[in-house]
Length: 203
Image (cartoon, rainbow, N blue to C red; front, side, top):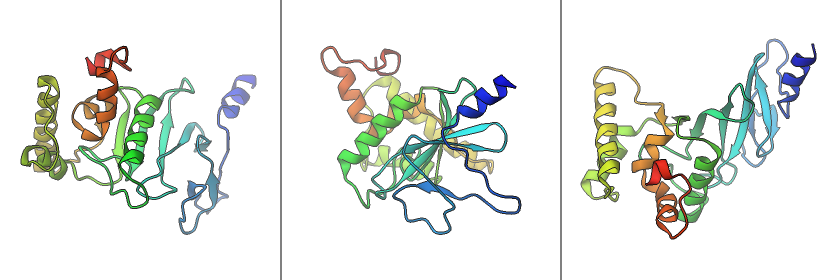
């Protein structure tokens, strides 16, 4: 019983719908209709009996935009992140209520909160369209051979998936970071003297 109680306490907030109702969770500053629960940045809530979800702030597409991270069994690691309009495969949502600095900040925060194995579930599947922009001049083509190879593989994978009527998402953070140009500030930090946030990714 004590172990069960400890597991329950791992979630900062227990948001449960009464039988026959649906719980609609949104960030504190997002004007979402029919919201039943407002969750602060970093708060956690439980889905069903065992799934803990963490609210990860990402203001930019809208001022109140948040992502939802599925917390692992260890109570710390985010195994999957539902990014909404903060991140797409190869890009991000339009910064309607933010700017390029906000985009960069969100991508840095996302990267440092998660790890290379985290699965990313974007709110829209624009994979092929966005990845093609890196070959047409709309986006900067990755210069490092390993990064360019990762981009080519991602595009081929997206095309293969769609050709066989399969989704091209989720994508893996450790691969996405190699070619998505919105992670550029992380690459710049890695290249700076004495700065290498994750050598295995940015070497």
